[in-house]
Length: 377
Image 1 (cartoon, rainbow, N blue to C red):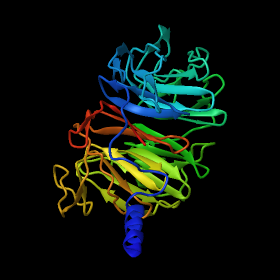
Image 2: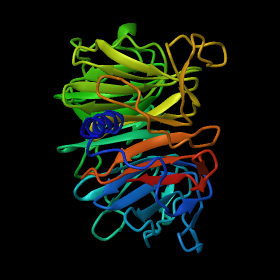
Image 3: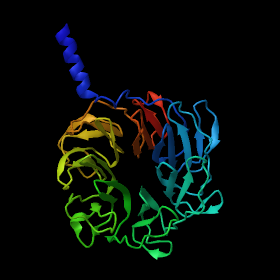
Image 4: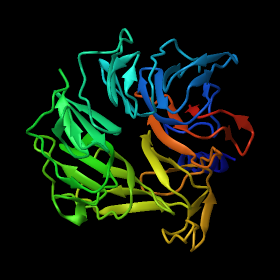
């Protein structure tokens, strides 16, 4: 009996890494009437940005929320923060002082604030003095020191030519003209600082005229020059990149997508392929969590014309999956629904929970209703 108990503990430990995954189902929390594109934590508060205009609290009360909202991740309750934006939010990021929001909006609370804005985390007030003015949609914001990096579809910022990627002052939003990256033919979808680099992912076709750095590249955060010691050789739209220690994880989209792990040189260490686009990746405890609009985890990365697993299916995984640090598939399976599925994942800064945003409305194969925002403990 002692031996059997010890074996059972080992099996459980191998399936659920310590300090991370608990239940397959999320806790009850506020829901939304349209997609959530991004989530970010400030302590126990989850900020959500997306295409929604209404929120339903845990008690069933409906409230107007125009593309940006806040939820208490412990209680699941909708919080009073309710700025009025006039367009979709594609990015939310927090620092110790500010909440940054970006997307396609033009005004915040009636103030002209095109496509990127920030709010004081202490008061919730819009910072009207910080106004970079990018010319088109912003998908990514990465604050770092005295700079804030912006990535998206724009070709200018503050009236100055800046194609897809720019650095602006964290103090006043003015363009940092010493940062001069050269990306071609596509948008930047995500930015991540780490390992002394600025990682850039998206749909761009080359960096500095070199196609081997397309879709995922590392740049010098001071100058914007490409770091040639990192070469990932990625050939599809890369929606998100995460740095964890000496690892880089990326969410690769396509008919059949992947979550892929790289070392600091860009060498691929492992991948887990799926039968649809991979849109987000996060590190939660000892597990790597990935989300997208897939339903099956594939045996190989050989995808058919509709994204199907050509060489066989490893396991059913509705819109979310987890792997360990070696890339082995874990048993965690929230089994979410939705055509688009999961747009974003973000772990609590203390590891207590994981927030997910997307188009889903059900979990557990229809057992639990939870619309577009989910918090796992």
